[in-house]
Image 1 (cartoon, helix red, strand yellow):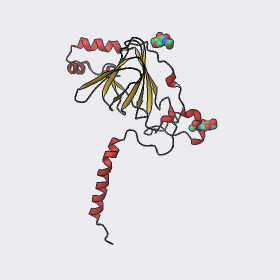
Image 2: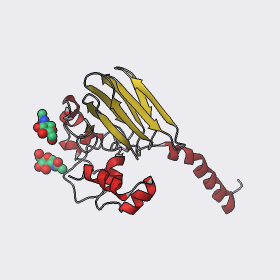
Image 3: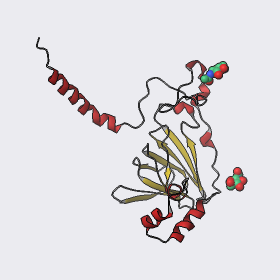
Length: 223
Ligand SMILES: *[C@@H]1O[C@H](CO)[C@@H](O)[C@H](O)[C@H]1NC(C)=O
Ligand SMILES: *[C@@H]1O[C@H](CO)[C@@H](O)[C@H](O)[C@H]1NC(C)=O
C-alpha cells in the first residue's frame, strides 16, 4: 500500500476544512451535545459560552414548560409596546437548544422601535390586530407589509427592523428566533441612551444635525 506523503495529508485536511466551512458558517447557535442542558442560573461563578447544565437528577418536567408568554405585557411606556422574552434568561431549558420566542404587545399606534438581533434570524406571526412590519437590507432597501392575524413574517439575521400597530385596537405578535438568546440592539437606546453616552459631536456629524437636536433626543431617553 502506498503511504500518502505528508503534503498529501496536509492538502486533504485543507480540503476537508474547505468543505466544512459553509456548514460552519450557516449554523446559528452551536448544536447541543446532549438531550438537554437545563441552565443552572445559580452557577454564576462559572463563565462559559451559554450556561452550565443543572445536574440531570435535578431536572423535572416543570423545567420544560414556561408560562411567561401568557401574560399581556404592560404597554404604558413611550413606545406603546412591550417585549416579553421567552429566552434562556427566563426559560433555562432553552440552554444549548438554539431557539427562543418573544411575545410583543402593542397599544393602539404602539411601536416596537427599530432594532436588530445580532445572533438570530426572526420569524413571527400576528396573533391579534394589524401590524406593519418593516426591515432594511444592508443595501438600504426597505421591505414592509401590513399583516393581519395569522400572517407571518421573517427578518433575516442582524437586519434593522420594527413592528407598528396600525390597526384600531391593541395588537400582539409572537416571534421565534434561532438562538437561545438573540440579543437586541435597540437603535434609539444604543445611539442616544448608552452608558456612558456617545459624544454629541459623533452624533451631530453622523446625523448632520445641531447639538441641540442630539441633546433633545438624549433627554427623551434619560431616566
Ligand atoms: C439539586 O437538588 C438538591 C436537592 O434538592 C439541592 O440541594 C441542590 O442545590 C440542587 N443542585 C442544583 C445545582 O440545582
Ligand atoms: C404599567 O406600567 C406603568 C409605568 O411603569 C405603571 O405606572 C402601571 O402601574 C403599570 N400597569 C400595570 C397594570 O401594571
